[in-house]
Image (cartoon, rainbow, N blue to C red; front, side, top):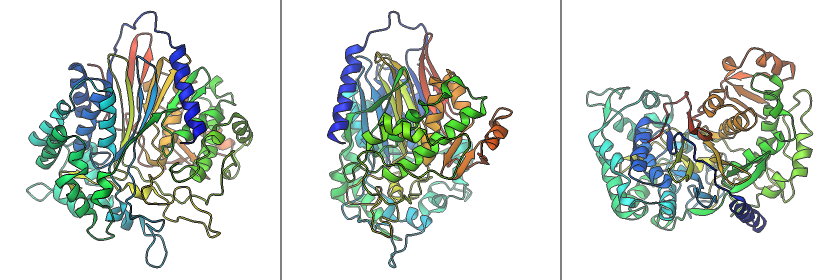
Length: 565
């Protein structure tokens, strides 16, 4: 993070805290809530809250259960970004548990012997795709700072469900039967095959004693149980197996460190929106909001084709800039200040004409260096959850193993990530210009994950939202923020709105869900919607504060629920 960015973020946090004033009366409704992609994970989080645990305490329990019951999306072998709001100080903190490339990685990580990029299936299933897992270490750091219960008390539900068995959900069953290459990988086949030789189906009970043993060790030893010792040795050994063996070492695991610092916050109308800084995709969400703030989208609504047109064109501009300039700021200069500069945003927004034109080129924000066109192909295998505790602390966390079942390789009851395939396979352009997201030793790959927390100008909590969905995450999050903050929709209604992903010359959308006249109105403006194209689909989850208390929303496209203790 640049010095200027750190200074701005620190000043923003101090300003919010200084201006903060408590609500005159506490709202009469729910004061705590858990929203996650599986009811079993939600119940695990609620149990922790009922025991007096904090939002971060509950997050540890939720993640431990999600890794068991939703292994296609996240797990102990993956990474995460988390945005945390302190209900007492109003400080907003970003935690980075993104995976890192091993010390042996080079820019040619995904180039074959002839210098050509590996095929995606070949890369994903190879050991070369696995980075150092960071989600557990990140949660341990946050829990040491914000936890109220003992770390050892947070894994009971995950251990019980793994040992006694849990009912396979329809979504998990669908992934098991899918054409995803990882679902046919040897480890996945062995895990998901019943004694009679058939594949597990919805309603079957699945036990995972190896997972129970792993979380029992994590409870007793902390994240070192994963990054050192026998589990770490098993990870390294599995990654080193062919085909496409990886270079991950015990030293890579033992020296992994999550990051923590002020969230990246910017004003949006009467609000302040906070996200993690790069390599998270949060800067893209903030840029898109800055573009839309120059328009009249707030005076419109979801039934107005012009509102969706503005949304789509702002999205295209944002993706063009994100793809060109965002990478790991420890390795490349990411022009965050330039991308969010109001003058730059006004110039970019001026490119939005009455009808859609060709794909917009990336702009030239202040601080931008020469960068190659991005060739990253980011798949999706991710989950999002939001937790609010009785003290007003809030956690918004997006967590992932990258693709469906990660690399398809298992160790100690959990899947390993294939997160390194989030790097650009081609590290340079023909003229030698480097890609911002090229692989490098110790580097974190660029991410679209952008868990958001919204405050008012007095630093009080307004809403938290996030989604899985690969590169479409940015559009999914943007949709809900616009719908809640501009169109004043309840968060569930905002989540229910049709998805529209506009990038380059492609517009993917849930065409049949738009109100009458919107699709035709967009076509008249040069926007032809294509059914689908939304990556893995959204899994939006969020919580908002209302005069009646907390109100949650869970994406009907998945299996999540929103519940209070």
